Amino acid sequence: MNKTANGNDHMDREQPVKKKKLIGVIGGIFVFGAFMTLCALPNYDWYKYCLSDFDPAWIPLRYAVSWAQRLVGLIAGFGLIAHRRWAAQIVVYLSIFNILTVYWKYPYQSFIKQSIILNRDLGGMFAGIGVPEVNFTSHVMAAVVSAYLIDFLFFGFVVFYLTRPQVKETLK
Image (cartoon, rainbow, N blue to C red; front, side, top):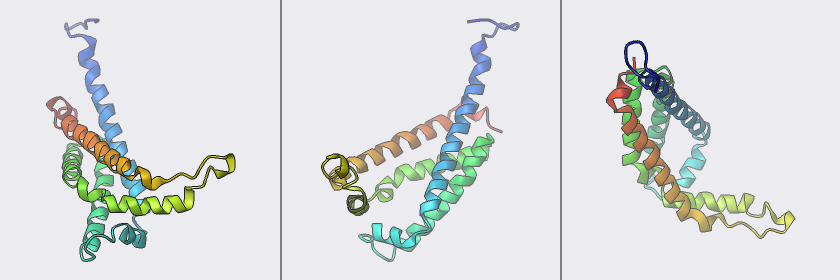
């Protein structure tokens, strides 16, 4: 490692820059995720259909929380891209909320219903080239487990990373 004039090595100067880039990447992921979900949320009938196994009285509240969470995530994501401390705190709280509510975020029956639609619309997409019909329903459990793992790993990493003292120092 090369030493600078004051005796510090270059790695000391480069680490905060790398951390700022990763903070921006995390912010970008929050913005992208919130935006993509907001594009799908306006279809309330689809939302109700996917969650029809839930108590119907809870669906409007869950829908409102979904909207609020995405809007807050969008704002916090932009704030994180700008390296704002308040945005990092909000993103940490949203991440903890996502970890604690992952079971309700990805209900198994919702995946079943979506797979039925996929079977209908895309199941025979490769029939023209001799591939047998794809059965998306047979992959639902793997999809649910994958969704859980992705959320646990991503949001767990976000909480771990943004609560590190060295990272907090780089925020304004």
